Each structure stands twice: as C-alpha cells, then as structure tokens.
Length: 154
Image (cartoon, rainbow, N blue to C red):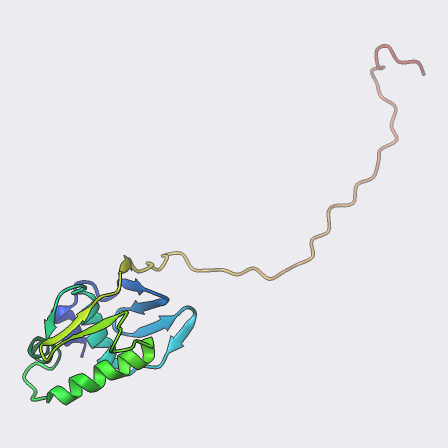
C-alpha cells in the first residue's frame, strides 16, 4: 500500500482542507475535531480525486492507478465513492464535494486549501510539574548609615 501511495501522490503528508473537513494524507479524515471512520481505500480515492480538483478523473484511470495489475470491477469504485459521500454528507444529486460525470468518472469540485505537515521538533517536549515557589523571605535591615542624607533632618 505504501508503494501505491507514493506512486501517485505528490505529497502524502500535505493536509487538504475543504469545507469543514481536512484530510491528512491518506490516513485520516476529520470533520472539525471529530475523526471519521473510513476504510483506507475510500480515503485513497478521495485523496486522488482531491489532488486533481476540478478535473474529470475517469473510472478507468482510478482503477488503473489505485488497483494496478489487479482486476477490480467498477462496483468497487462505486462503493468507495458511496462511502465517501456518506461520510462527507454529500448528496449525489446536488454535490458539494464529489460530482459524478455521467458514466465517465468523478470530479472533486470543492474549493481546496493545502497546508504542509507540521514537522516534529528536534527538541524534546518537557512539561514541568507545577510547583509552588515561595518568594524569598526578606527582612528590613536596621543599620545606621555611614553617610548622612543631605537635606534631611533627623
């Protein structure tokens, strides 16, 4: 599967934002802060379509790119798209995200924003325990000054 992902994805770690959703690579789809449960293959289909936003992607192209060298019927592709539409709450009659173009294929039609992945810091994260720190106890000193203040009466 990893080899398959690298074969067609420009940057597997780029996060794609569309509507209230964001897709992390081909691993996870989020709606706001809620992780949506979707199988890996439909997520791969979604990623492939989203990276070709606005372009007609034929069913043959999807089958050839996502299932190379394996015979898979178009029914599998339709099941993946149906699962995506359910997760995205996308109506096939008036789509917001995935549009079906006759019997030719699909088009991702939502506006898309990409963000690069957040790189891990080379510095370890250290979380300090909360400690009550008392300020040092200060006392006033009662000493006679050696030099008198000018202009002050005693």
